[in-house]
Length: 276
Image (cartoon, rainbow, N blue to C red; front, side):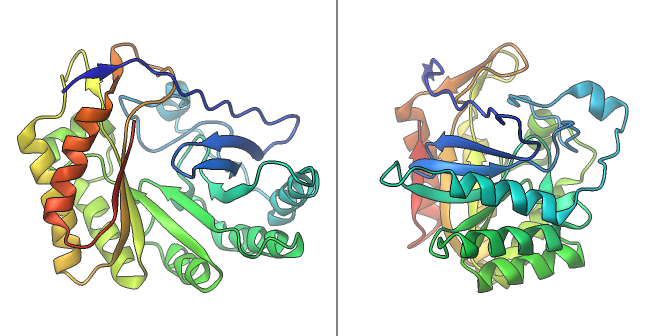
């Protein structure tokens, strides 16, 4: 599997705002408005390929301060109102940012405020996306949020970067059990269709993902479907910005397509895209 230099830069300047930013996203295919509920960068994962997380925050177990739903919705409304007429079209609004939004207490009212601000701006057709590592999706609040997203034109994009426990531990470096991630993914997919996002890369320490690991990952996806889950799509991608940790490199288009092909073989009729 070949290496490719990082060429896509996704600058997330907040322009004086606390939570809302604008970015060009290759997976969305254009302009995306992001919502960052964790500006102190205290994610519960410490992924090898991460581009933003402050590991000191993880070590200190820094607590997230409460966020008012009205503040997030107000920032979003201001950003949507400031878009120039005839400018680049907006593709989506995404809860993403620098931490894990599914573990945020009070996510449900924040999400309602985002949908309301979107609709008030006359953009009800723009999807709202939650990009998540899946760790908090077993919480009752997040199940209710999933129902809200499904009812109002939103979707959960859930990450799965490994097929085996060992590779998960080596890549994601978290105390969250792999079984919980798999169970939460399967449970969410049974509730409403979800998109799976999977990051693959070349590491000086780990090397490229092995064929066995890729097959195991594709097998995990197939089990979700066999258990009654619905996958709206699978996104296979690689690093696009400089990573916080040295020795992590992007895979080339051919290598990503090999991985995508494994998913297509395992998943009959599920759209699988690669994003070099």
